[in-house]
Each structure stands twice: as C-alpha cells, then as structure tokens.
Length: 361
Image 1: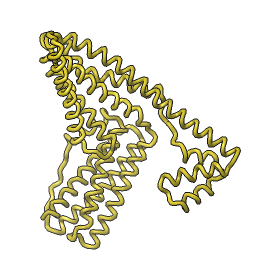
Image 2: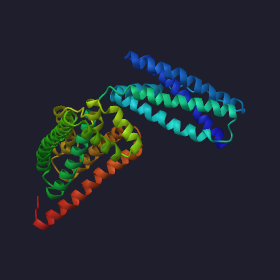
Image 3: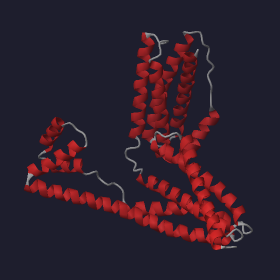
Image 4: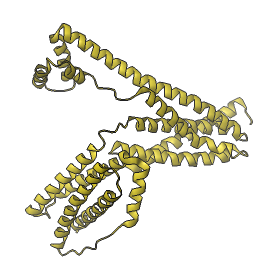
C-alpha cells in the first residue's frame, strides 16, 4: 500500500507539472524559455501516462485535478523572482523528483518493463535539470548574491544595534532610531568599500598570476609546465592524468593560465553598489518603527523585531532558492533564529551597560 500511495503521489506530481509547464508556456514572453516549457509539458504528459497506466493495472482509480489557483501563484512568483531565480526553483523541484524516483526504482513492486520505463523517466528528469540549468548560464548571479549578503548584514547588525540601545534609552526611541541610522550608513559604506576591495584585489592577484605564467611561458616552457603539473597534482588529479594534460596543453599559454587562475567575472563597482544599497535596505526594517513610535523604545522594538523577522524570512527563502539545494523552511528558521538570537544578546548587553554605568534614559 505504501508503494501504491507513492505512485499516486508521483502521478499527481507529474500531472501538476504538466499543467504548470503548459500554463507557463502560454504566459512566457521569452521565445527560448517558452519553447523549453512547451517541451517540458509534453514530456511530463508522457510521465503522467506512465503512472496512470501503472496504477490502472493495479485497479487504482484516479481523478484528474486542475489547479487553476496555484497556477496564478506561479505566475506571480515568476514576476517577483525574475526568470533566474524562478528557473532555479523549478530546478530544485526536478532534482527532488529525480531522487524520489531513484528510490522507487529499487522497489520490488515494479515489473522489469515498468522498471525500464521508470529508468527513461529518470533520464528525462535529469535532462530537465540540465535544460533548466542551461537557461541560467548566461546570467551572472553575483550581484544578486551581493544584494542578499548586504541586506542580511544590514538587518542583523542594525537589529542588534537598536535592540541594545532600546535597553539603554527605553524612553527615547528617536535617539535609538537616529543612532541606528548613523551606524547603518557607516556600515553600508564599510560594506561597499569591502566588496570593492575584495573583488578588485582578487582580480589583481589573478592578473599577477597570469603575468607570471606569461613570463614563464616565454622564458621557460618547461618551468611553466611544472607549475601547471604541481597545480593539478595539488587538486587531487592522478599524476599520470596530470602529466597527460600538461603535455597536451604545453604549447597553449591561454589554456594553461586558465587552468591555474579562475576568471573573476564580477565588476567591483557594481559589487560595491549592490552591497552598500542592500545594507541600507536591510537597516530600514529594524530602524523605521523608532521614527513613528515615539512614546517607548520597547514598544518600537516589538515592531522592529517583527519587521526584521519578516525580512529575514524573505532573505532566507531567496538564499535557499539561490543555493538550489537547501530546504527553504530550514533556511528561513536558521536566518530568523540567528538574527533574533543576536538581537536578544544585544538587549542583554544593553541592559548590562545601563546597570553598570547607571544610565537612566
């Protein structure tokens, strides 16, 4: 019975996927993505038939389900996330289904013919992941990553700042808000400069390595080959394979340099702007209540924590989608607990400072 229930789940999953890709193909404006969704819809239709036949042969009756409301949700999600993040979300779903199918592939309930059919489905699902992944290769995700990291830092650091100050200035929320804003702006500048320096430094290091390789290649090809051989060996590649690679690339300076150095595709100015602006966006959520609730810092703190928790949940969801593997639920819980935990410790420290220095504000 457990195997039959799993098969019913697979049937409805494939049916939902067929309906989803068919719907996405109708509303998608980009030609290449539209064609991809149309192809995926046809493949999912074949998968749906496989599970329908599998269950029908065992006397299980199925009722088709149409989920028009949830399809609208996916359209909204596509608009909010953009094509890059949305396709990654679809990739995650395909990856999960592949793992589940492989477990079922080993179940003795399957006949040999059914097992072969399921093997074809697993191949299709792996091809889905590849096709969806190919849609993401041209997009540079580094700026989104910078924005996520910057916003998270702004949220957590400024939430901790205003929480600690709320314990000290319990009756002066404007002071807390203004202080958080000043600290936040300074932090945004610091983060932007740090991002700029990091990307630029990595680029300069790589350029230095490439320059050294160019010098070695022109002066002593054997020495350049030795450098590459050492690099390949350090990465765990067997010596015989490393030697073969070096011999084949020995006369190609660019190929040797590319193996030694990973190209930095990020733009340091863009990285700095995204990180700094994201930090400012992050500080907005914990700071804003202190400018509207002027009677009590503690009362403003309650709304500050609520706003920050909502923002941290959004950031956690985006991080999970961007990683293509992390559980969205677990990542949200991790982000919220870590952020609020830092805030709680900051409040305790602020209370301690108030007690030690006798501040009464």
